[in-house]
Length: 77
Image (cartoon, rainbow, N blue to C red; front, side, top):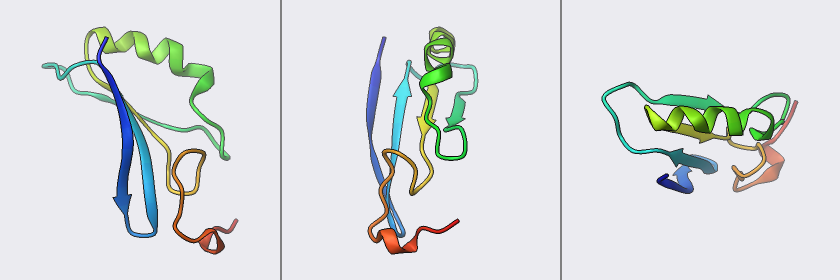
């Protein structure tokens, strides 16, 4: 199964993403991390199974896990 990951530069840092599966006629599933600050591990194996029919795109909001801000002083509750 095709999988790729990387970072997208955005204002204030870099947002991490992973795309699993190939482009398909069905719309992709976009998966945001859990909260507060939790990651995809609990559901990832289940959601990856969807990639047989459509792309599954995982991402972390800026400041969560793999998405690193340029300046951590910008982070707050």
